[in-house]
Amino acid sequence: MFLKRLVIKAELLIRFCGFVSVLLFASFACANKNDSTGTVKLYSDVPVGKVGEVTLTIDIASAHTAGNAARPALVIIHGGAWRRGSKESKRKSIEGYARKGFVGAALMYRFAPDYTFPAQVEDVKAAIRFLKANAATYGIDPNRIIVLGTSAGAHLAAMLAVTGNNDPFATHGLWESESASIFAAILLAGPLAEFEHPSYRNNQSLAMFLGAKPSDAPELAAAAMPITYADETDSPMFIAHGDADTVVNVQASRVFASALAKEKVRYEYRELAGAGHAIAKTHPDIYKQALQFIKQLIAEANKKQAGK
Image 1 (cartoon, rainbow, N blue to C red):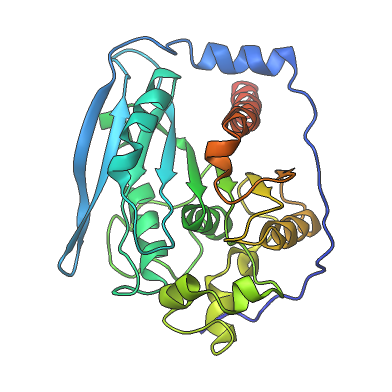
Image 2 (spheres, one colour):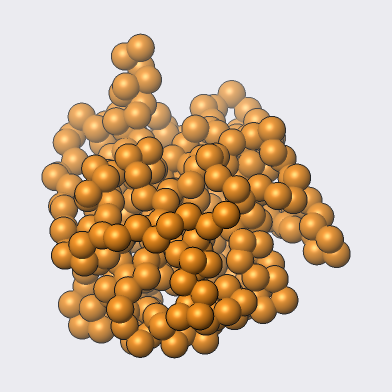
């Protein structure tokens, strides 16, 4: 049964995180003292499980060595309008994150229109559960899993952040003994909310993803939008969007950020003046800003854990 569409104000509420203290950065550095050490090993096409005739796989890059502390995982969800793209295109990126103290991973999911919502959400959740079940094998801290997505990938990453393990998106039986909750999410130029704009109402890719036009199936569209599930239990999120985006209108992120503020969810929002949809390419510094946010969260969590 689909959830009712939440009615929220479309007013933009932007919060900026403060500067990260020296203490917090020091805490993160100590917790990741094996940064940039060890040889990165790439595990390609690791089977997550089979759904019908499709075998879901994941690529994992790890420089973890025996005796060192488990690392946070940074999982990339590729974009492509829910109907194209590949995890293979992210292999250099995940190897780079492995050299920076993370375990990098890139996952695959089934594509529209052959598979419609919620198949893609189910698949990314299965990948997170797989990583938790096999955390020891790859040197992952299962309580520090971060997801990063652009465009449609940002939508799926947001769905992980807002639904956690309390949701209906776990129907294909893969690794369901594990939680699909995540530590944090990085969302770049994503369709995160319904909004009053032709780019949403008449979006062909969204219609293929849903199996119906949003205007013809409003309850289905609402059930597929991260904003529907926003509440105080959501994972922290870093959100960025260009105000000149002609693929996904910036209003989607503005409205979503407003909802998070209303629910008192921890987040940071960056709106890039004059930037289009490909902000990851035109504004690569956005990754540094996102990682600064993530490192602060990790340092705070480590400090809190050490104080117990």
